[in-house]
Image (cartoon, rainbow, N blue to C red; front, side):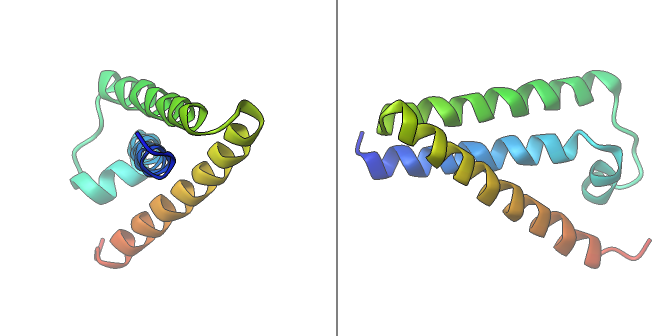
Length: 98
């Protein structure tokens, strides 16, 4: 894989991981799923899945760059991913009339 492809993969994995972390919180879950409560096992699954996706994003960064650069790129991608997920949650909140 090319460096660009690996960076794109890392960003997609980071976004998915941050999204899973966001959905593991009751307030965000209710915004996306309605009023149904999130089961404890689903909450744990989302958190484990989110952590695994973020770890996979780090592995993709390591495959694309030397370790010192990979840490910097990964941290930057996590920041971008968190911002995008926060923006998505905010836009979704504007669309609801609770």
